[in-house]
Image (cartoon, rainbow, N blue to C red; front, top):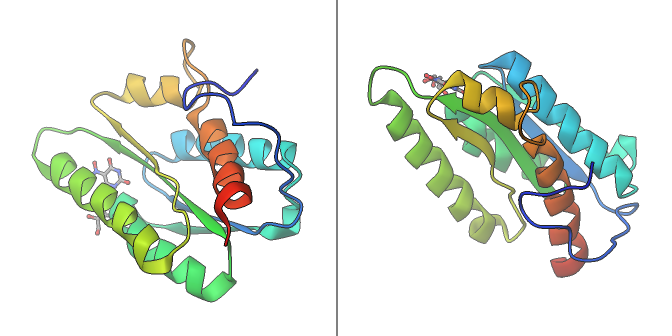
Length: 159
Ligand SMILES: O=c1[nH]c(NC[C@H](O)[C@H](O)[C@H](O)CO)c([N+](=O)[O-])c(=O)[nH]1
């Protein structure tokens, strides 16, 4: 299936020389595993070598920003794809985590001067998340978008 959503990858890129970190949360694991699979599938489609895909996990999405920074420092990667799945509950917990995680991941790029892909689903229902992981029908696996985005951002902008 062609990668849609973020828009088709801009041209063809050779990822054979790039190192990619994936940091994933363990909350909503079935959804996370599908998203991680989709990202890896797309990275390999653009020739990223398996040995250059470094995967680490954290308890939840709130831990993604710190672990993403550690991934850059510990594994010398060109880009990190933090993957999480936040599903709204009955309290404001969801809103606070979504806001904190998204703004910190954005800021981290300018601190590290390397791309951080926003791979966090922020869903109001579990069904929305299942659809975006292509577990339920109706949408493509958003992890594929994130993998393609990672390759493009490094190949196009690496200094
Ligand atoms: O990754 C998630 N973490 C969640 N909470 C845990 C949080 O990310 C931290 O791991 C925890 O607060 C400890 O810091 C979630 N909810 O609470 O709903 C969620 O939906 N997804």
